[in-house]
Length: 206
Image (cartoon, rainbow, N blue to C red):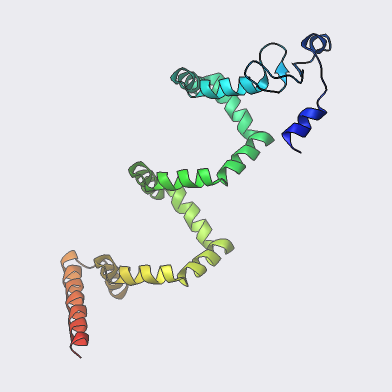
């Protein structure tokens, strides 16, 4: 339904009549001093003016400081916890988690130095290792892993990895059954690089 149709259906009532009926809002059908044709609060201005004022106030340093202080207080923490556990809170959190805004913010954080450090530190915790192991053993984890291993992205990654010094070390570790000395890995890796370059040179001269 359009805004104009909604306004046309609203009942005209004066502030005096609204107060007599115990209502918090009333609607005159006339514009306020700023030109808004909207409901008005019986104790202040029209709701459109109130929203505009609140939006502007929320951007001030004073408001940000007050909000931060409240969220860090005992009362603020208790309220936020209760709201997070409510159906309304869960719905808002779920909607935000699926939004493009959240996805973009998450991607930016993961690519930042702080994000990389946080992720690296968490990946080394027992909690992360246990969760990762449980996921890999789950049906969903197995299906995801199988699909990724068959993807072109994985094949390209493995090709780069196998040609790296780290890939050489992993290959030798599997063959020998123990960690080979660093100088041995470096020598083998260098030899492979030389061999690949010689093969390329030979192909170019054919």
